[in-house]
Image (cartoon, rainbow, N blue to C red; front, side, top):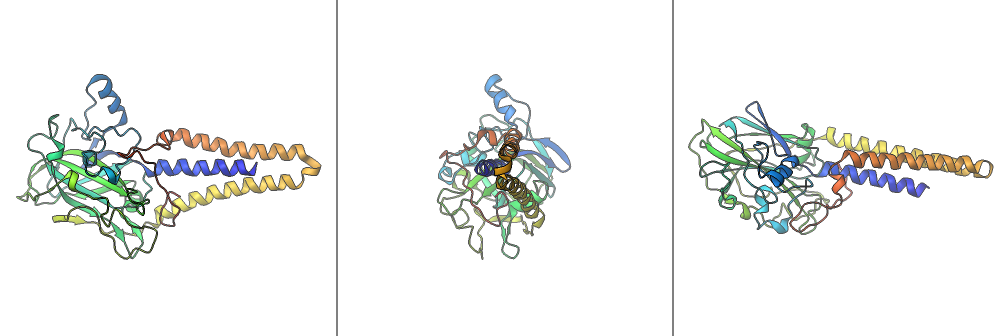
Length: 347
């Protein structure tokens, strides 16, 4: 019976990790105005009707909040996620203004990066060739050696959001903003990193004259880049953020200690462990008196196990991501790799 309790507890932890680990941008706030992002509902709308609700977020076949694997870096999926297609609406922000990207719950370690690509005309055009867009990095956050923490943990600590300042020198025009988290909890394995590229249409107004040369999406990363393929479970003395150099006037985020996020996760894990331990202790106590009250012990053990299993069921119902577990989106169709580590808040 104790074995059943442990199995159910492990299931709860696994489902919680999946719910925290994968994600997408639900919306943005550009110069104080909120714009809704892409929703999975829109995917089915388009599949069924040919159109979908207006959104600044690009359409994608991201059915499970999944990722793009390094083995797909040389394909168009790395640009704006699986089969990414232009959004049908455009937000507006002033040069020097801010864009806040709002994510679903996040729990993996890794860098946070934002690019922009100038569209030749309207970014909403269904004929826009995303493979021809040239991406310029305007914002990045990596790893703090001093605090031993990641930009993605800062994002999680800030209510799962990340604010980008648009360079004041950036030329006015219609841009696709490509905002991305690269989860590195599996980076010690080749093809183990996970990219979560999110694209939104934003028109920049009141800009300067800077129109730096960018990099094609399929050339942004390589599988063996030092920030993509490395061991995140040893002492990190230096971390190279993947991708091309930051443009002049771009923002290098200072990653700070996110003890609040990690402590919250640790507290949650401790609470779960305490609950399981209590259930196990109750079972042990009941078992010790089995000679006198065998029936009562069996009833108590069964009740404890059913309680944990019920919690696992509730956790599964609460997580749309978990319903798709263990499958995750990947050009290589690989599963989410997770390791136990003090810095990874999901375990």
